[in-house]
Every structure is written in structure tokens, then in C-alpha cells.
Image (cartoon, rainbow, N blue to C red; front, side, top):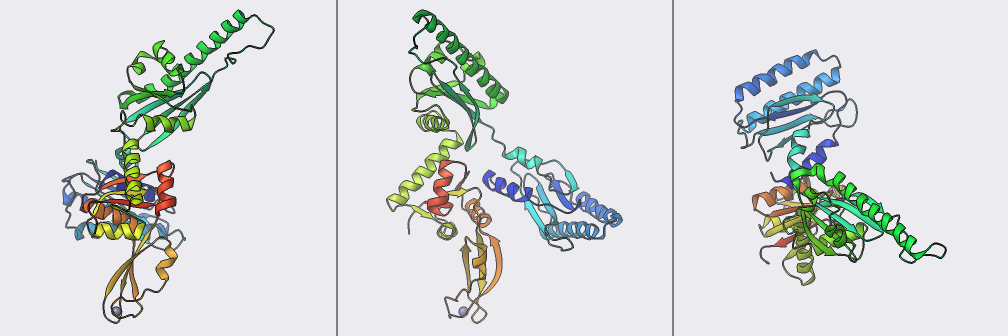
Length: 403
Ligand SMILES: [Zn+2]
């Protein structure tokens, strides 16, 4: 399971709430003996018999039975890094039972954990999707500075600093020399402050900080660099000095754009390039598909090279069967309500029955994994994410070949 897929599952599961402590999280390490897990589950099942609240008791026991059933069904074949199972009653209405099981093949080996709680225990999986690389950006001129951290595919503003130095031209009253002196002092204080804030933000990232970009209009950034305001441990991490028009959040965007070559291995840049390439293909009517239905079909045909999905995209895959002739069909819907709308059989024209509903995004991610497509999960907080959501139904694909 790739990282994008895992991130999505974590987001889904963290919203599940059980009434009382009845959601089970089970982490099984690789090659863990079958007998040990099964006897532990049998044990927990009988212990759960002592739970006072009747509904909770029923739900916990049903979840444990479901887990045992699942492990038998897969004949206890554990993926190479072990297996993580989440199971419990997800019905939001008290008294109702809707026991669901989610199985995750972790990207790194897991240790054994068994928890029964009101939420699923996701911390070990969260650790696995944390960015391992960060970049810093300082966009500054003589008046203000913005410090940002690039974390995976997004950046966050960490600090803003304003200079208290007055403008270059002094109003009458004091002598020009005295004015100039005061301005220099304030300017020096400002640069010291930028360096202090940078230290605060960047030093704690330690070795994970791969580089710092200095940006901004005019020569202030170079002066800041040349006069060695920055802590030497950070100064040696400066990988580029680029010009931008702004020093605010927009300046940070510009810096990332203008430092693309320097940051070419950073996820945020790889993602931006993929989106640009996708849009380029769409514009020239080339190797691109977009919208959940079209992309789903292209994935099924194994034509997708790169899949671009907005992180919070929701879509449903309805599986239909014709009661008259047995013909089967499937349809992707962006609105859950459309699942209920009648679908005509392509073979005989009769109205088809909805047999199953699947999470279309999950299905797309699964197909991408099976066909070796590269997946970019695009945060809707980014400009690229907004472009994908507004213009392309939240999902696009760069194709390997046309039809
Ligand atoms: Zn039919």
C-alpha cells in the first residue's frame, strides 16, 4: 500500500467514533504465529463476556468474531510488513449495529498491539506517513520577512517579521546623520530577529531539513546572507537564493516556483510539475483523462501513468446487475444520491439492480497500485489542489498511451 493510499485510510478512520470502548485496533507483526493471535482473540472474546453494558458487549464480541473470520478467510497470509486490522461498530445511531472491518498492509513492519478504545489507534501508522524531508524558505526585503516550512506536498507559514526601521527618506527635524544611524540600528535588529525566528523554526527539524531557500525582491536577502546573520548550522543549508516579487505567502509560492530546479526532488515540486504536465496534456488534447468516471475507466484499462487525486475527493462506485439478462455494469458517481437513480441495461434495456456500492477513490488507488501508476495525493490547501478540484472533478490522469 503506498503512502497516498495509507494517508487517505488514516483520515477516514480517525473520524470513526465508537460509543464506549468498542473499537478494536490489532497490529500483527510480520510472520507472527497464527496460533498466538487466534488464542489471544479467543481469550479477548471470552473476557468481553464480562462487559456490563449489553450493547458494548455485543459489539466487541461481534468485532472479535469478525476479525477471526477475516484471518481465517485470508488463510492467515500476512503481508510482508505484517497486518493491521481495525474493526468495530461504526453506526452513529445508538443501539444499531454496523460492524466494519478495515485491513491495512503497512509500508513498514509493525509491532504487536491490541487496543480496544472509543477511537481506532492510528499513531504507529501516522508515524509512517510523516514527511521525512523538509525545506525552509525565507522570503524577505528590508521591510518584512516570512518564514515557511515545506512539509511534503504543502508548505506552512511559520513566522512573519516586520522591520521597525523607518523608510529611507527622513522627515525634517532631526539631522540626516542621526536619522541614518537610527535606521541602521533598527535594520540590524530586524535582521537579527529574522535570524532568531529562523533558528527557532528550522533547528528543531535537524537532519530532516534538507535545505533553505532565501528569497525576496532586491538585495536584502543577499545582505542577510553575506553578513552572516543566520546561525552557521542553518547558513550551510542554504541551497539557493532566488528573486521573488513578494515577501508574503505569495512570495513563498514564487520562491518554490523559481527554485524548482534546486528543489526538484522535493515532493511539493514533483507534484506541481505533475499537475502542470497534466494540464498541458489536457490543453493540447493529448494524453490525459479527468473526472472520476473517465479516470476510473482509464485505470481499468491500465493506461494510467500518473494519477492525480485531491485528498478529500469523495466518489462512489455502483455495481449493477440486470435482473433480465444478467448483464453487469458499473458507474462512478460524485454524489451518493445518484446511486439510487435508475440505470438501464446496455444489453436489453431493462432497469438494473444496484448490487454493491464501493468507495470509488479506494478502487482507483487499488487499480493504480496494481498497474504501477504513480500516485500524487494533492492537498486541497494548495493552488494545484484547487485547480484539480474546480477544473477536473478532483481527479486527473496522465496516460501512458491514447486509445
Ligand atoms: Zn439486461
